[in-house]
Every structure is written in C-alpha cells, then in structure tokens.
Image (tube, rainbow, N blue to C red):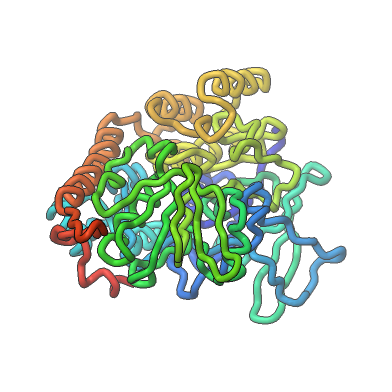
Length: 497
C-alpha cells in the first residue's frame, strides 16, 4: 500500500466521530476531512425540527433501490439550483426516545456517557436506570467530535455524492446545500472511511394497493422513522407492521391513546433476537398476520390480511420494517441481500484496502465495535498494521457465509462478540504508551452482561405493562382498558425536546 497522507471520512455520527479520533491520534496523516450532510454531529441521534416528507417511491422502497445517485455536473466546481430529490436524511428520533441498551454497553472504552436520566426512565426502571435520553447521546457524539479541535475537520451540510478511484487516488464529489442553490466541487484523497450508517432509507414491503391508499389519504402510510410521539394517533385506528423493537415500542406506546385494540402485524414473523415478543403479549394489542392488500377504492380504507380477515376505516399504517443499505455515492460497490459484500472483517473492501467501512454491522455493542474498527483502520492506513493476504480475506467471507448466511445475519456479531473484538485488536496491535494511537483494551465479558441485562429490564417492563391491562366485554364488543404503571405515560414526556 502506498503512503497514505489524505483521508476522508463520510459521516459524523458515532462511527464517524470515533474514526476521527482514531485517525487523529495516529499522528500519521497530513489531512483528515469529514463530510456530514446534516447540520451537526450525531448521526441518527439528531432530532428533526421539521416534519418528515410523506412517503413515495413505494416500488423502489420495496425493491431497496430508492435513494438513487444524483447526476453529477459535467464541470466542477458548479453552482446549481438546489436539488429536490428525496435523500432520506431525516432521523427516527422522537421527543421522549431513550436508548434501549445499557449506556455502559454503548459507550466507547475511554469516553463515558454522562449519567443523565429522565423522570420517565427513573419511574419505570428505578433510580439506577441505565438508559439515557437521546439528547445525552447526541451531545456525547458531538462532544467527541468537537474536542481537540476535531470540529475543524468537519464540513457540515455537505453530502458526498460520488466516490471513485482515478489515477491511484480517490476523487470525492461533494455538494453543499444552500437555501436556493447547491455548490458542487471535488477533492482528492488517498483513503476513504465510509461511516454514514445504514438507518436512513426505510424499507416498506410491496403490498397491493398501498401506494394508492397513501395517494387517496395522504400521510396515512408511515415508517417508524417518522414516528414523533403518540398524540398524533389519538383516537385513530392504527395498524403497526413489524415484530422487532421499533414495532414493539410504538405498539405499546399507542395503547390507551389510539383506538383499541392496537393492531400489530406480527403473526408469522420472527421477533427481535434480543427482546423477544413480550411487548406483543399485551391485552391491548391484537396480533395479526401479514397484510395481503389495501383497498382505498370508493372511499374505502380497508386493510386485508393473509388469513382472510380485514379491518375497515384504518387511519394509519405504521411500518416498523427496518431499513435498506444505501450507498448512492459508491455505485460501483453493490449491496447484496441488504449487506455490503466483499468486506474483510466487515471493514476493508477486498478490491482495495484504502476503501474502508466503519459500522457495517448489525446491532450489538455498536459504539464499541465502531471504536475497534476505527483503530484498526487507522493503524492499517498509517502503515502500522498489516492485513492478511487477499486469499485469507476471501476465505474469511466464504466461511462466514457458510456459518451465518449471505444476508443481514452475516453482519451480526452476536453471540461471538469476544472473538471479533479480539481478532480486530490483535490485528491492530498492542500499542505501547510510547507509541501514538488510540489504545484498545482487552475484551470484557461484563460488556455483554450489561448489554443483555438491559434487554431483560425492558422485557420485564413490558411484562409489568401486560399484567396492568385487562379486557372488558360489553354486548359482545370487546374493548381494552389499560391501567398504566407509573411512568408509562409520563406527563413530562411531551416537553422533552
């Protein structure tokens, strides 16, 4: 590998923030540049002050082909009319969102997440609640970027539109958004760190009549990414689609607010591996199979299900169905089965080790994973660590596909956290105190214990709520009444912006 002097980082969320620190501590690079399309650091922990645009492009969202690359101007630099294509830059933060993972399992190895607890979390989980408000996490990430002058490396409101290798260097085409015009230009680097995350482009399954339903009743179809709190759904007939954690959070949050029962499309779908299906056992939730079609003809608002049942007069369908990997700035790098193939250790692209990824993994000790990956990237790019042969890298992927499959589970580190962390740490090398670079401690089993214990706290929360609900029957018409435990519907939540 030729000497690396100039490095670009795409994204200033948690992955990008720790990548900046790891690269800077190597003291080996002449230039580190970070491009972030939002107005400040934080990634998916930023809060949007504006309402999300309504869903469109249903066919593309279902095929995972939305968020197409923009056409690049023939001549650069350029000033052009502000582009209007949907880029899915909004986040899923709502006013009373909190972490669903113990903060000690989230934080980086040195920098600790501040002990800031909301009244709601204390009322639910006790004074030692390990969960933190979204504001705490956003500030935590921003503080990491801003210390030691790292903020000077970052260009905000700037989107990376194209990254290509030309004449042995990476050409990066950029677009800075203005009020009426966009400024386009290009810069050149020796290496690229892709840290843009993969919780941006919503996945919506293909369902007959869904697009027509949204067209007939605007904003009747939503993704959990656009959820901004329960009040919007008061007295509405709602269907929540998705058996994982966002579906669980939204469905339980709407009990006693939206029309009873809350309809949850979970039957026949796999529950979240960490949290299980406890949330959906609530008597205020009616479990349903997949939607077969939606009928909005002649004023209808009817949702039909695969078992032949249907619900009339549906006001909202909320899809908690996850996201699609999107790399519009790297059209030469394919996304297969919603993962990026050809990445050694989920980090180094086998076609070129100067194209690296931080965060191309599924959930689990994520911030710490980003740290380990960033340090290895920094060491390799600085020439202080070496990767195995291309043949060994390819064999690693072959073996992992055989074990995990060639889809999203490939990227899941659970339950082999220690093996992955220690493999990355050994490759990075144990830097002595006399050497530059961020130091990686040995893996600690208590991280996994805290991680799993946090999940159990939430499961017990749902179980308590399940016991607090009961069903009354009046003339054959069932209605669900929920007695909310302390903190379930805190009056302070709406003001936590």
